[in-house]
Image (cartoon, rainbow, N blue to C red; front, side):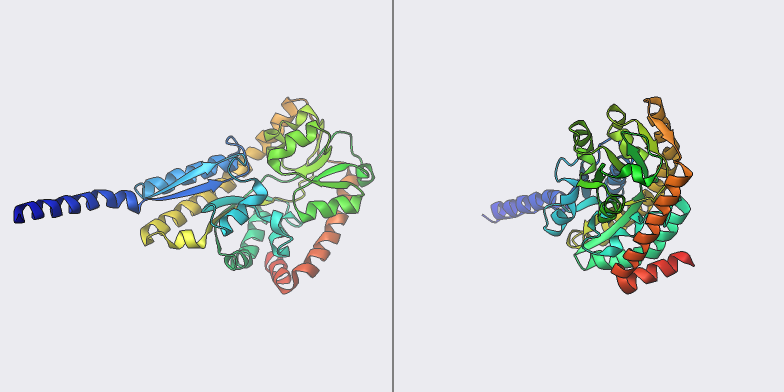
Length: 325
């Protein structure tokens, strides 16, 4: 009887020991609104592989691209509600919640990678603090190439934008539409191809990367490379999910995130010229924009900077002061 009890106890212990590694594994879902071939998504996939490798499989991140799990504008809420653990957002899309989130999409405030990096360093502490209040932790940020104007017709001045069906993806792009007399239409990146095909939009500001992903040349023939701003995507994680990891896994995630940020900035800058070349190769007319168009756009930028500083209050002024040092 004793022998049988000991054998049974040994079996239970062995079964539990075998079950422990499986139980210890964490699985995270990571939604993003961009296609698999986009450089942001490729960077995320590499990040997830790095995490799985450095944690020896204790943390597995499954990437859901193209808005297949949640649409781009649903991802932040999904993390806050515990429906996903980690995700990618374009931070300026949430500037209605807090103006600070929109600082990187103010026209002509930061128009180069060097300036965009400086602006991120100035705004990161405030951004992180505000997201932390919502139970979210910033892991890393990567910019899009500079934003230009795509149009179905030639543009020589701001007046040519009057009445255009203007794709908006954040409050600042909506505000530009208002100032130039265009009609703002909210369209996420994953829905842009359809919006163009149906005539829902015919003019918009975005990067050459999104233009390439959406094959805009099928409906749009002109791109004005005015380098208005470099918006950023943030990879964020639920603080609750992050806290549930053991210390070595947390350190592995942070290390992989730092590497993904450095890699992402480098690739974004390197691919800028490539995306422009692809637009040209597919028959688009690419132009730097007339002096009049650029001057009028910069004037609009001054208006939006002043409005933003007023809305963002002390935090906004602190960011501008730090950036302009």
